Image 1 (tube, rainbow, N blue to C red):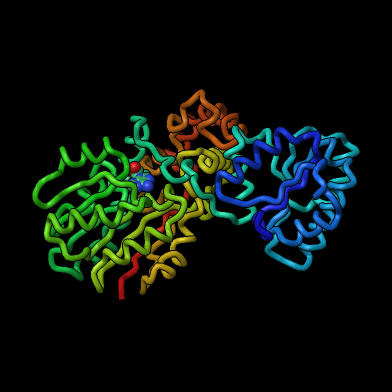
Image 2 (cartoon, rainbow, N blue to C red):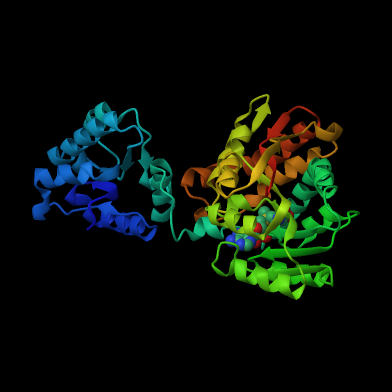
Length: 426
Ligand SMILES: C[S@@+](CC[C@H](N)C(=O)[O-])C[C@H]1O[C@@H](n2cnc3c(N)ncnc32)[C@H](O)[C@@H]1O
């Protein structure tokens, strides 16, 4: 075992089976753990202290058994004293069982101010571990739920995407005109092109040399090629996070005599990828000197509705916890990632859209793209990362029609965090 670990695991032997399972998921997602069964000789105080000192985070599994264990209480006390000295050291309490009132009170004395995770609120251990990682600021490896969580298989998602694109195309029209004006017949790369509809709509009536679209969804790419493929448009199937991405794009560049791209377009994709640093570095390579990357992505931190209604809070909560809706805080992360990848002139062109934009012309689109209860029409709780989101669904579905009517009659103002960025290569 290496001296330093991502997580020190504090628990009671009585919960060993459950904790062992969770630890195996933690390891699968690429984090290392200090995890010792209590019957091991390593339970001696010095070993434990060393384990806590050499771990970057502390996760304590709370049950009636662990809360009454002196060993666990001692570990918590050590972790708290370490946290006083190291500000980014996270202590994460994970509740495994209903705690007795007495245990709850005692443990709250130590950990009351922290954000507790309740294991039974998560639909599976993967979702629980991802929540632990988020608190500990650990980026998961092998996280398929964030890498390819998005699916347009449902007809309703196709309709949602069309509504989104009609509306957002109007929002980015001026930005795209400014960008296109900089180049003669630009070469365009569209990342996460889906069936090509969006990039074709956004480039209609504009001059360009070639559009290459990339998407991991084979069916969507096939549709794109059937609809739009010709000597100026090609679409390839490739996971943009895979090692093959650059090589596959270079092959197409040779095939179509493209030296580099002038414009790279990425709409509603980064939030579905989890890690974007490597991709942005690759895109920096593919861009010509002076070329521009244009990004549209989401950030729910900006969302607001007036007047306040629980219905909208519930909808936002459901979005946040649906496994297909990606990283709802992606918008704010993009500037730093662009900078780290070497981009210059990073501009936030706009950070929201609202129900009043364009004199309310796209009011219904705004509703359909975000509050259409059929989007989540599912009997399957594992579509979400916790049960609460699944439970809220029923109420939202019931109220949806009435709320839409009120909204369409102008009774609500809605603003959504949709970020538009541009950045250049030198
Ligand atoms: C919300 S859709 C946006 C589609 C299109 N850009 C638009 O704005 O209409 C996200 C797209 O990203 C694609 N995608 C997700 N993860 C991907 C990956 N790792 N590699 C390539 N494409 C990916 C999905 O297949 C999907 O087509």
